[in-house]
Length: 568
Image (cartoon, rainbow, N blue to C red; front, side, top):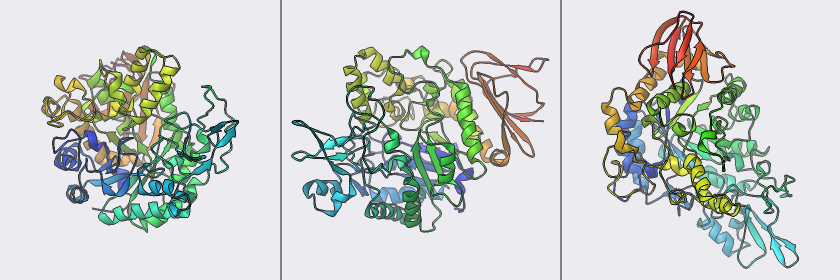
């Protein structure tokens, strides 16, 4: 397999192992299941896989709470299964990235267990412990910082006056990256997998490695009245982060050709991102922010009705544009609509009523922007959220459990809470891949760990879509084939220009090169009109039959109609 910046022309696929394919009938997907479906991924056109966490874990946060970085979770298989997957994937020209949890461990990790047992041991310094504050007879946490999964970011150590810090769940204590020993340990873990043949890492929660070590109270208002404030500036994308990542790259990669992707969240500016991912200089090769994920008001929309959720097309264009302008000359960029932490893109920006049309339109719109595309498993089938799931189906997720309790205390009705999680819950993306119309969608012979989306009985499954020439799956295959061909060079090197920037409903852009490539997409579930001032040389891809172009060169775009055009 050739080296260099191989991801520039790659097609990434985000694989959530527990929900991809179960090989042993226990209801949980595994490495052998992924191995069995490599031909499917190869035919789809995928060139590298990002595997969500496969390390040993008590699964309080579905594997993002790692108990042992040097052991594969028995639910997913063995280290030998990983070696075989690497060998077979590489033989098919598919690279493998592992999800490396950098910010925290499980509270069941031997380091943390020893840290609790012996306050004087070295492992105690791997984590963040602070004494609580006295308020009369009460012992309060060290400060007012809130966490992403619970009101307070601190958990008291039983029987003591000390607390440990967790930016996520209570079961995931944060590592102290200001400790060089922690930096060395994490670099050593990464290096051991690179030695095995792993091609790189998506590094989870990268943004949060550096903390405000003064641990002073946040001055932000306590809006919930519980005494805690979620203030990302205290532990997100802080100045010290760059140095930590530069040292990690130097120690872990040792000059090897590997891809490092950092998850930097939604509070980073493009100029900061450019420094972190600058080719040949930054510590990262690609970085994921969430700026284009929630552009319909879904995030934090508890209490809203479904009909109030509407794609902000102008905001989408603005967010793609500002990152492109800041980064394209000096950085490689990832392209994605969603991942395992978000609702499915069909529900975010598409339409259940126009499932085929919108799923195809969203792919085409994303795939031909500047950058490396990442598809989340199931997108290629046009999978939808869990529209009929009860609240209990969403409580599998650690963050959701905390949030449901909080919303109930705040007085939201069960109907409001259910509606909110049906359109925002992380469990939506973790529903199993349906391979056929069987009882469990061909995913397993046993009831799956995560709830099934029963649309597989209506044809939303691999077997049916492979047979249907007009399916979302076959459209994906053709679109990816075009993207990987000569047009890919124009996408990568041609200047990106926005077409009819002020159009509130259409998302359109042009790549100028030896040949000009134009994408036009209606992002609405109704007809819109688009002024067309180009001469069509070729229709490369289109998700409807026929072209509706009037003599006045005004194009009528049907619901979610999308074109990929060679133009003059």
